[in-house]
Each structure stands twice: as C-alpha cells, then as structure tokens.
Amino acid sequence: MSAPKSSLEQTVNFFSPEEMADPGVSIHRLYAGDRVHRFDAFDPPFFVLSRFEDVNHVLMNPTRFLSGYGQGPNFIEPAGIVSDAPMHTFFRELVQDDFKPGAIKALRPRLEAIAEDLLDAVEGKDVWDLHDDYSFPLPVIIICEIFGIPTDDIDQFKMWSDMSVAALSAQDGSAYQAELERMSAYILSLVREKRTNLDDNSLGARIARAQCDGVPLSDEDAVRIITQLFVAGNETTTSLMTNLMMRLLGEGYQWADYCAGKIDTAKAINESLRYDPPLLAMFRTTAEDEEIDGVTIPANTKVMIHYAAANRDPDVFEDSHQFDVHRPIRRMLSFALGVHFCVGAELAKLEATVMLEALRKRHPNLKLAGESERIGPFLFWGRSKLPVTSGG
Image (cartoon, rainbow, N blue to C red; front, side, top):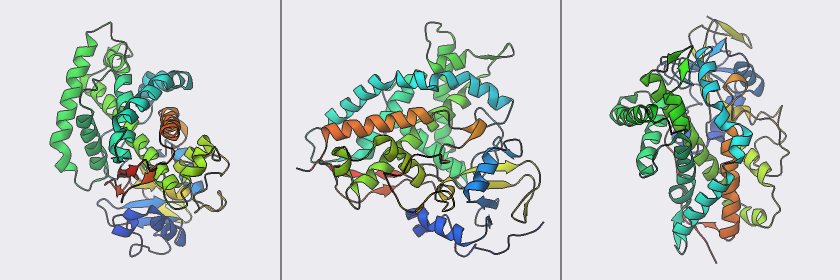
C-alpha cells in the first residue's frame, strides 16, 4: 500500500498530556501535516482524517465507511444503533419518533422543572460544582424518564455511563467489563419487566416489545439499543453544557454579556459544538481500499474522522481557531451527517438552552471557583469537575 507523504507520529499524540489538556494542539499539528495521517500509537493503528471535506465525504458514504464494526478505535460486532443498513435502519426507525422536534419541544416544561429543582438544591452554597450538581443530573434524569428507567440512583447510572465511554476509547477495555455486565443485567431485568407491562408506553417498553418482520426483538438487542442510547443521551450533553460554561465563565468573562442579553443562545450553543465538540472524533471502518490525496487506506482499516479538526477548517470557517459566540450559525460536523446523524441532536440543544436560561435567571453573577478537570477518554471532551460560585 502507499504511505502518507510525511509522518507526524513524533508530533501528533492524542494521549500526550498537552493534547489531552487542549485538543487544539492536536488540531494545529494535524493541519501542519498531510490530509491523511497514520497513527501508530494504538493497536490496531488507524488513519486520521481532519479536513472538513474529507470528514464530510466519509459521513456521506456509509456503505464505503462502515459504522457497524465500532465507532471507537477497536473492532466490535455490529449491534443496535452502532450498525449499518438494514439493521441500523430498523433500530433508528424504532426510536426516532421520540426524538423528533415536536416530541422534544414537549419536554421543555419538564426540563425547566428539573433545572429549577437542581438549582434549588445548591441555593445558598458558597461553592458548588456545575458538573456534579447540574450538567450531569439534568440530562441523566430526562433520558431515564424517556426510557422509563427509575431515577432513584442516577449516580449509579452515571458511573456505568462513564465506564461505557471509557471502554469505547480504551486500548484494553477489560477493566470495565464487570461493571458493564452489571449494567447490562440491570437493563435486561428492566426489559423483561416492561415487556409484560402493557400499560407502560415508555421508549424502553416499546423497544422491549418491538418486532422486526414479525420476530420479537431479542433480549440482547433490546439491552444493547437501550444502553447505547442511554449513554449517548447523557454523556455528550453533559459535556456540551460544561464546555460552554467553561468558555463563558473563563477568559474574557462573557457570562456577563450573556446575562445582559448581548449573546444569542442558539449561536452560543452552536459555536460551543463547533469549537468544543463533546465527541472530538469517531471512527469508521473501510469496506474496501480507499484513496484520499494519493494515500491508499486499505480495506478493513479503522479511520478516525476528527470532528473537532474539521470544525476548525480554515477553508470553511473564518477565524476558525477562535471561539466566537457571535459567529453566524452554519453547518458543522459535531452531530455527524447522513444516516448516522445524531438522533438526539435536538434534545441536546434544548437541554443546553434550558440550562443556560435557568442559570442566567438564578445565577447572573456566576464565576469559576477553582480549577476544572477534564473527563478521561481521549475521544471525549468535557469537564468532570467545574467548581463555581454565585459571586456577589
């Protein structure tokens, strides 16, 4: 096979402390090199595509760049939403009605009530954590309610969810296996209970009772799709919230302008998704040999499509490496495109909107109160800790 024209293995290292601390370092290094980069510091090695045109090309050609062998760097068996047609088509049609704009709009009053309850719980505290107390429980509670999962112990669900995304990114996911099996066992029990309760019309119950061509969905498939959507439905939204607030409360303190009505909510959310995508990248697997910019990527090879880098392509976005909350809204790639466009995109944006508006009303003087901490998996970008104070 042909090789990339130059090697950046010594400069691009997604696992290095500086690139983990700031994905912008990786992005600058990728743009300093060739369009196609081979990354050998992972087993199996993978290719990296970072330009908007190339990432768009992959996303719009799902039969040539397959999702079903895992959207992380490791090869897995196709299952649930993480699959290709026709399996993916069936599962997406099964759940998509619950995530259409009308259904999401109807959730707004409940989201606003959850936000108020969470802010009531920190009322009077000098310092509290925007992640632990607000941006993590808000999406977990609503996704639990959508699926009909009890919300008695959301900390347990959050732990399982964190382990799921860590396993996705890990060279060796065995350290997480025991807890993930506990999560699967819990959801299996829930599926079997819901299957026989015909009064339950939650999304979890409808998945449990679903049939494909007259054949009931297996326990295994029901557990997988609920797990996948549950994890996707809270992890990335939590990071969207913490990333945006980290920028608004950070250098330049734009939170004051937001509270004064000088920053449009939709533009701020869109810019956060562009500049700080909660999923920095995802993976596809080549169905056949692919040639891009003179480089042959062999069949059955993992390809990282770097959303964060594509979102800062200077040929597409003016001043692409600047965080600009006034930037006009235009298409970016953080929710993917085509048949694998994120089914929960509208829910994530609504949750972020409700979060911002409730904070503006209740905490207009909010300030950072210490160092934040980055979440662990290298593919994901967000804060696991974001201490704040309500100020004066």
